[in-house]
Length: 591
Ligand SMILES: Nc1ncnc2c1ncn2[C@@H]1O[C@H](COP(=O)(O)OP(=O)(O)OP(=O)(O)O)[C@@H](O)[C@H]1O
Ligand SMILES: [Mg+2]
Image 1 (spheres, rainbow, N blue to C red):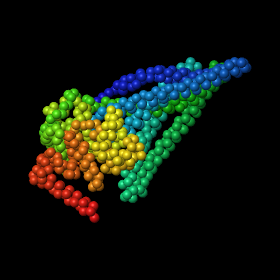
Image 2 (cartoon, rainbow, N blue to C red):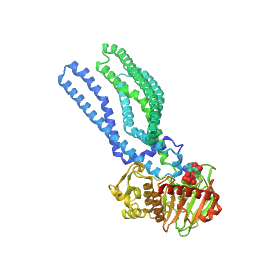
Image 3 (cartoon, rainbow, N blue to C red):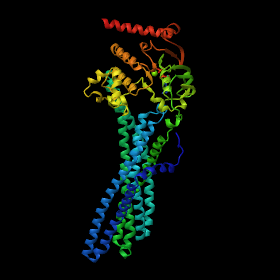
């Protein structure tokens, strides 16, 4: 990650462009904030005037006039504070929406290798909660903090003018109260962090349990799951109760001390002055009013300081995400890929991590128009080989060449356009069948989609659906069968008219009829195409031009089916095993 050691100024600098976009909103919000804070200062002064001037003079007109001013000030400050909240919240929402958009756009460009090292679900949840905090920085927090600071300064100036002695006397206890409250808030923040962790833990558990509901139900473990959750939830409850007890208890104590202590000090100091006439009752009233108005903002300031700190940590975390090295920065090649002759792997070595080699000195060539099959045990490196060919990862040693040009020098996006990739784990997106086949790309016409559907022989299936291609698929395609999912993934690869088909066959067992159907579709999909097939069902490789047999991260044998039958003992055993299983299936079928 870049920018790790940047200062806060760097991050503030990063927000300014977002603020600039909405500078009028920001200005208006700030202006409303200034006025509201000013207004909050004025109303005690108006009442003081009534107490000190209008009442002693028994001047009813003056009293009514100032009473009217008081009402106007209250109404205007109400309207303004409403306006300020609306404006600043809008600003916060707008900024954060832009922000999240940028983060997601950036994540889409992050290399796959990065996603492998990140628990993405957790990350997205973090972005969500971090964004919420950054939003508060603009809306609630800025309103409270800037507003309160203006208010404090105003109050301080007015009180100093009215009576500097009393004001100075009150300053010390005010600071003591503020600092001690800060420590209480800091102590509490540990509890709140723990509560948030427990909450995240409970949410993650519920998500997992819901997704694995079938397993839980079939193994009849509902009660265990419930107990498991109850345990987490009761520790959260205990923590919540304790935190609220401390928080509200301390708030009560502070409020009491604040009000009582200050009112006693003021009355003690001002009473003799009022008696000898050097101070008015109105001034005493102003002091008491200000104290009540200052109490919560003063206490909140400790909380606000911590919230601002947290918001900045969140801001930093989000900005760090947008500073991630993108695929564009990794793939700097710009040559236009031409694939006329062959794809070649030359002494390719690859490890996901350090020197744990997943591919060791892998070399092979795929002449255009040929069909190559990768066969071998689980974990021997087949999927990794095709991932390298798609440029999802870079080999540490060796080269992948397309017509003698290294993949590093090619424009990877144009190269990927030539590939139709059918993954081992079929992924279906939320949406209808059409969107799933063309993966939101409108450039692929409905005609192309229909053609692809026809080649993979899915027409009947789609016609039988209530809304044809527009039929919505359930989450992760739960409302269709494994075989249908596979055929949709074939159609997806075909709709983009690729030159090279890469198919990582799923190991999921399918009934023999569907298997035959998939087999037939596959033959049609691969017609006249260069193909790399990771094959688990050996029926798919019988006619391959070359079979690469992987074991322990190396290609140990290569040749066509007949050649491997005589040279590769492992392959022969695999074929015999599968023949055995298919003959058993045949027997079952005939029974
Ligand atoms: N994203 C990854 N990060 C780290 N290691 C990985 C990753 N993907 C695969 N591996 C490891 O690399 C090795 C090869 O995995 P690969 O997926 O290429 O096997 P495969 O031959 O496709 O197996 P299968 O037949 O089960 O699909 C395995 O040991 C696996 O644990
Ligand atoms: Mg695999």
